[in-house]
Length: 161
Image 1 (cartoon, helix red, strand yellow):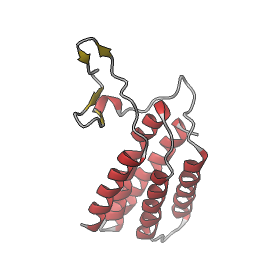
Image 2 (cartoon, helix red, strand yellow; image 1 turned 90 degrees about the horizontal axis):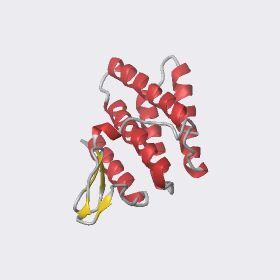
Image 3 (tube, rainbow, N blue to C red; image 1 turned 90 degrees about the vertical axis):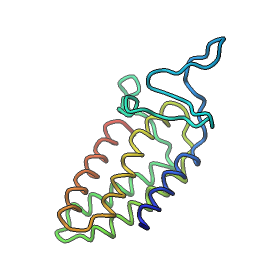
Image 4 (cartoon, rainbow, N blue to C red; image 1 turned 60 degrees about the vertical axis):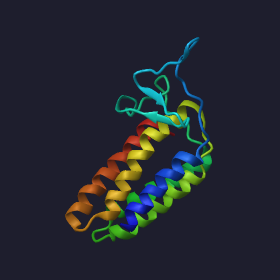
């Protein structure tokens, strides 16, 4: 229950801590239209549908993440790599480190524009994976979820620098 609340709070902070981006929806004389992949709610919050969650490069080049945020990503990568080499690592300890890393990453968010939107496509699923990892109740589930966390970090490296 506590972890679910923490995850919910993290996602809320993520949504509200990053600067609000203007909608990329086309405007017509009759008012705003919605594309098939983006929508803006009445409250002005930007929503993403499944089709926009696929990561892409910036014209074949990795997206730039600001240095203040990369510090936290690098620390999480280091923690994950160290855990992978340990024979009897404490996954709860790593999950706590990753949760704190996500908190710090979100708090340091100053990115804007397309790079910011692409980072969200990676970060939101990563936060969910860390939550699942944290909530693992047995070693088998923790091992499986850890593999997913590792894959997500590899995906980050494919799309961001």
